[in-house]
Amino acid sequence: MTDRRPEAIDGPDHQIVVVGAGFAGIALGASLRKAGLQDFVILERAEELGGTWRDNVYPGCACDVPSHLYSYSFAPNPDWSRTYGTQPEILEYLQTVADRHGVLDHIGYDTELLRADWDDTGSLWRLTTSRGPMTARFLITCAGVYGEARYPAIPGRERFAGKAFHSLHWPTDFDPSGQRVAVIGTGASAVQFIPELQPHVEHLVVFQRSAPWIVPRMDRTTSAVERSLLRRVPALRRLLRTVYYLAIESFGLVGFVDARFRYPFELLGRFQLRRQVRDRTLRRMLTPDYVIGCKRAIFSDNYLPALTRDNVDVVTAGIAEITDSSVITRDGHEHPVDAIVYGTGFQVPPAVYERIHGLDGRTYADDYRECPRSYLGAATAGYPNFFTTLGAFGAVGNQSAIYMIEAQCRYIVDALGQLRDRGVVRVEVRAGAQDEFVDEMNRRSEHTVWLTGGCDTSYYHTADGRNAGLYPGWSFEYARRTEHFDAAAFDVGPRSPMAERAS
Image 1 (cartoon, rainbow, N blue to C red):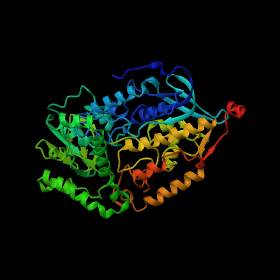
Image 2: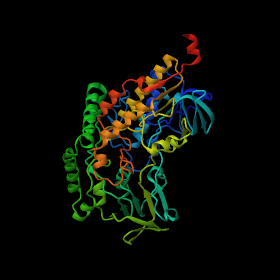
Image 3: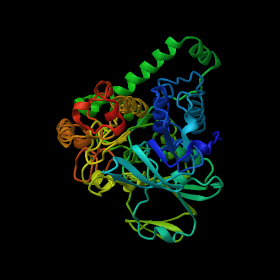
Image 4: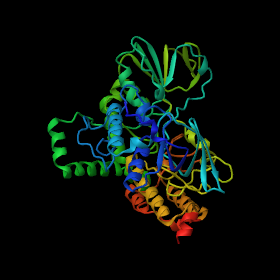
């Protein structure tokens, strides 16, 4: 359990308020402290830090990016027990980093942001929280996009009499032994927990809307010798991180360079499918009908074999309704089940976006749904003194999210440092600068696989076929663009009364 320090919130007024103590919030907290920006508090609605790695406790929960890349560059860990970190190990890593970098002293637990309103007269944010009112000169949301469960709109879902839950809310007392279990969805989470369920259930029915691309994971336990070498030879650790970085970054060749680069990656996926699924009928059902990269490709070595077991059925007919004891598909077939697990993704935008009100009273969620837009994924016109991590066009489909988060933290902290040094109390990205950036993003997205790869639905595109917010370029290019705060793209001012008198 994290060392809880509720005295982190020692008053209602703060220079900087950060929302969320997950990977982004902890990285930002460490960066703020390093820059000497100490007057900040991190609001965490839960009793423990960790974000998605605290909340997801389903069997088999692990990262799908190698651990030496899915970790902070400023806090390397040579002691990962596996190539891909598991949920308990990643959560422990976050707790350790927060402690070592002094971030724990700034976290206010059990404190949820209920509403944020911009006060243009005072040039500050007025916050309503579960612990009372607060003010913040600068508000930064580090709330992840995978924090709110999304349930499908299936008729009869509420009348099911058995156990039913989303993978985000996995009950610790759920025992699948001897039960007939339905899994609805075949996304990244389902791919991890289905192999864990299969050996224990009497019967498993997997309802698949579209087949995911599955590529080899090659996960393994690290040896004591390997871990010792990585501890003793930092250069080797950096080399390993670079190798993983380049391997993941290469997916950009398919995403936004030329779809013809898909063939080696698809060949790898088809090889995995043919090697692990011998039955031709099942193999056809599990063969994706879209270009790899159009949706998120998933790394797994045990998902496909689990689907071949005698106690597993894969159903591709759409679901018509759910009764009190079964799932009925559109072909009229009834599947009796004792429990239903929803692996149906997450609510985007997250709920906290609904609570942030900008200059004209609109919420950040309203703007996000109307058209994903921001400037560098870090600032948005109409929301002064407001920054985000992994905002629209601030994430990529071909790199670890941690790499992008660190780039955004550098940009935000550099902005706050410059504003502090100049005595400025208000900053807002210019609408023209934002429009130019969004136009560039949309123009560069026109021929990406995310929009042309044949997906019916995807996190990568909006319902009307636009880029939903991925940066259509290399992550190192993005890191260069966000290396320093570019004040010319912002309306900066006025200065604080104290700074005016001092000058």
